[in-house]
Image (cartoon, helix red, strand yellow):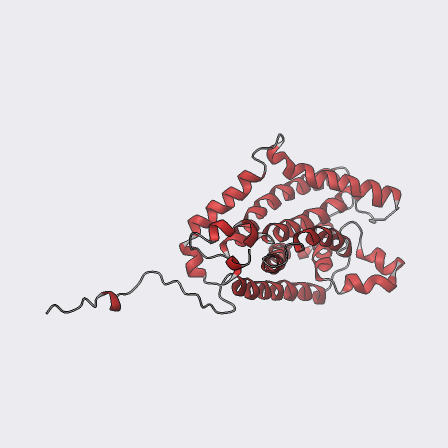
Length: 291
């Protein structure tokens, strides 16, 4: 009688896919193993967004510039919002550049499950790669818009404007990380809930617009503190407002900054990312049944 072949029972598998996951499962080793797929998604996100448009990548430049002009006309010229010694357009461009990266990360990752249900249902790969690719691809867009901001910065300085960065500029990578983690974390939360409640997608568009004003993007927090102190608490306890204000403070040397507000915003971005990761991991086990 032949003995059964038990070699497969004791074989060391290269990959093992399990349904069970830890709540805070973020397997860097596995993600690195799929790095080629991650970069492929990043390239797809960058190329396909404006592939069939007339202006193409120029929209990366037009959007922040056009929005800055509108803010300057409405808030500074019509509503007489003062930006101190900082040129109005440069002040608005700084806030929009920072806010734009957060917004794109949030909007892009908020539809992870609904947009990629067909791919998720056919092949396995770490699902968190999808929202990560959105964050990385938007980092390229942020870099382009940042170069535009630097170009106008140099122009205004050469024209004699009283603006200059301060020592907080060394925190620039940390602020970029906070924008990314906040947008990614909130996006993963929204993406998880949209698998059951599709109308959240429509609500998100309105919520992002409202959140922009509550984050003091088109005006300084000092104006709210001075003219409407009864509403200042809304901005004081909004960590996104501190991120935008901190970005302007380190680049234009204007605004309100404290180490407490910096740590508060940093703690929020890390916490919301961890919460988003927990909810994302729980949802990916069964989302295919509800999408």
